Image (tube, rainbow, N blue to C red):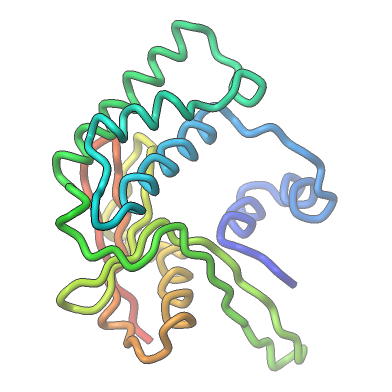
Length: 203
């Protein structure tokens, strides 16, 4: 079986939705909130993908406006669109002020991975796939960063138990087997609040 964190979360939320989405592959339109989040992720990828000349804040904001999802994908009124623009630009301005791209040693962005999970009882091998928003090199080793556009911030305890972070740790170790778990920092960056919550995993 091939699966991912998002598929597992869908199953936990609603097995019937999982069946439609992952097994029957019934096409489903993304929500406006999901499209907005995807677009913000693309802007941050643009921000960190250029080296040695990183884009200015104005260039990042221009990218945000010029690459806005088409009306066919994201149906919003003029007023709603301006609200999204205002919220998105505020996020990007605040993020850029705290995270100038030249201050980080970014190893990769939108990094895909696959981890093989063995089931000795059934003698089956499953594939756990995913994509990491950003990987940085730091003094301790590496930091995995996942961007969140949601309003709600979880507790530190929830982050310490977060399955997505555990899967990302496995993904990074699959890519670089020499890296020890204690040298991997796992971070969720909440863009609405400008706050980062970090955790680690044991072997």
